[in-house]
Amino acid sequence: MKIVLFIIILVISIFIYPNPPTWVNNYFYDTDYYIGIGHCSKHNENYLSIARTVAIDEIASQLEISITGQVFQEATQENQQLQEVFKKQVTISLKSKIYDLELVEKYEEKDNYWVYYRLSKAKYIEQKNKDISNNINIAFNYYKIAKESERNNMLVNAMKSYFQALIPLICYVNEPLEVYIDGNMVNLFNEIFFAIMNLRKNLLISINPQQINVKVYQDVKENINIDVKYFNKNIYDIPISAWFVKGNGDLFILKDNELGRTALILNRVTSTDVPQIIRIEIDLLNALLDGNEEPVVKDILETFKNPYQDLLIYPVNIILYMDLPLVQLRESNMIEKLTNAGFSITDDINQADYLINIESITKKGNNFKNFYFAYSNTTINIIGQKNEINNSIVLSEIKGSAGDYTSAIQKSQNLAMEKVADNLIDYFKNK
Image (cartoon, rainbow, N blue to C red; front, side, top):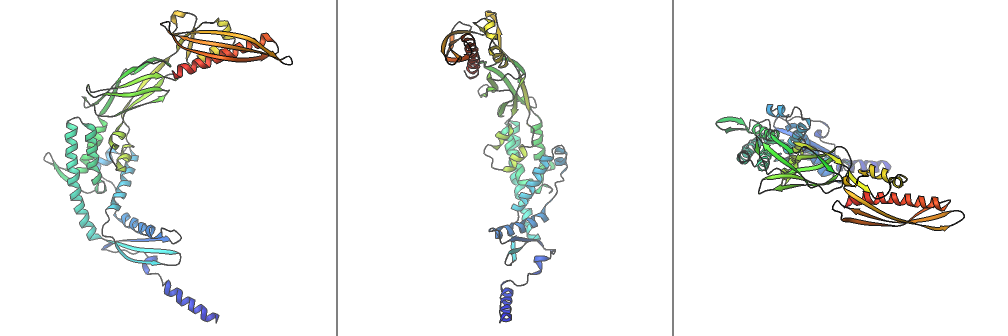
């Protein structure tokens, strides 16, 4: 009985899972077709689509080309990242150009699934030639639009059109791609690529002034003029970005479209780093990605080093005149705190940016088991150069404790002065 049952199971298993066809385990070459065999474990719920993708990838690998264009190689010899971007895009583009894929056969076992696809070499070449002709026409039209924009100094529009011209040709980079330009037969991909590199290379940015001295924490409204030139022609449609490489503060870019000017407006500096650096850069990435859905454009642009200028900022301390004896100030950490935060203390009121009037009253508190308490109430008046009170700050009940009232009062006063320093720093940083 067991033998009969075994034979039945064996027959059923053979019927369900026949011997695999030769193509499952033996790769073969076909002179008329590109062959792709895909495999995936059936334990993966997406095994059907994964096996198909593996087969397509195998066919695409037989179509892949190396990028050997001389202009491209020379232009990217110092930019390996850009070469990798193009190689990746060629692979992606090739996969999208695989038409008329034919499913020849599929085979599955209990745990595995295989699929066999092929692509007619004759049909692929025929379709590729049609695509090349069509894409050359598309690219050439964009190229002519880009050239016209470049002649009119509309460089953002020119660069956008150059990229729109480049993308349809990427996967055919090693084909002749020949067109007539000004009576000469040229490779269109090389012309477009060289135009992009040339445009980027000849974009120059300058700033005036290149370094400034600025009162820290003060509203300064410094204007830094920004000029962008292309072959000595002023360019006004290029976006500019600016940020603190070192230091901190408030800034923004102002464009005056009527006058065709661009400026960096520095409102204030809130760091005491010396020097501070603001990088002012031509922002090609944001300009060209506006409305462009092609990932390859972003990938290419991220390999570029945008032209930039660095603005050096040397912060100048705010000078304070403290309306208290220096001896009293030095007994606390007040001067040290203010100095470390970017302030200078003077005993000449005529040199001061601000007069700090401090009124402090200290009173005795309770005592408990030979422990004495004192409390200071302090008012800070911040007075500007026009003798106006800019702000008043009240600090209440600053407690000091010690083994006697005299020491408790001194401790309370010292703590109050440190609180004064903290509040002055906060005020000037955030006003």
